Image 1: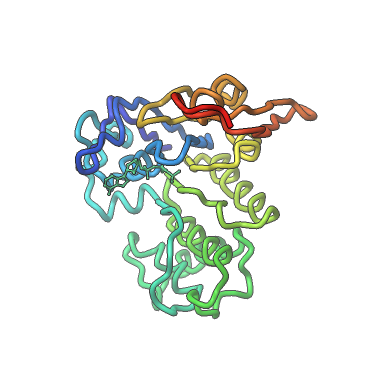
Image 2: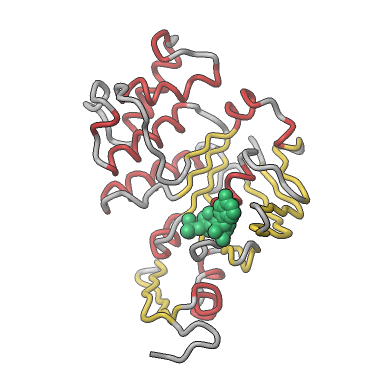
Length: 265
Ligand SMILES: Nc1ncnc2c1ncn2[C@@H]1O[C@H](COP(=O)(O)OP(=O)(O)OP(=O)(O)O)[C@@H](O)[C@H]1O
């Protein structure tokens, strides 16, 4: 059971304050969805949580230990990170790309021990890519490749899984497949966070949501607390209609609100 926390987290990128004073705790057993407008700092936050960016202030801790002080191999075994829009550089077979997720365990793709091989096969199965194992990962569609990269992260079997826009490239069925995988990971006791832009889908799967805007947490909590028409207007700049359909939250973006100082069209 692994808890990932940020306290007073600030990150500068060049001269830009990308994150300021972020406090959050990602808990085992929960799927937390991070939302926010473009440029809000979501990717920066996830990279800092993964220990890939050094904070300018505050800190990120994994079960109380500062994440940037954990040796990289141990960190990679503890936190699986799926970057946004990841690519595959080499024409390796899908099985071998997914098997790269076992490297933090010291297991090489061409000589996996049985438990490692099982983890790779289970990850390929989880994302619905059976039958793709021998295909070159460079010869796949964007959505297929996105699922290969998620499978690589799953194959690590890390107690923490951080996924940056894991469903952005996927068709509706595979969006559901992947979100069900993330929810199952959480239900199995892992600590799971995902960045998403589809607010209705996010509300359906999130145990908890964090709305980030201008590098700060604007609001967090249950989806119905975060996704109110007022919060959507204030932070996404949209007039939206939020309703309940059979107990599910539905967000329909009606129109963009004028930027402050801009005349309505
Ligand atoms: N390498 C960089 N140097 C300077 N500024 C950067 C750098 N990378 C990102 N930024 C800026 O930091 C801010 C946060 O970027 P970030 O990628 O975290 O946003 P995001 O919320 O993930 O956005 P999106 O929804 O568009 O993916 C943005 O204003 C961006 O322009």
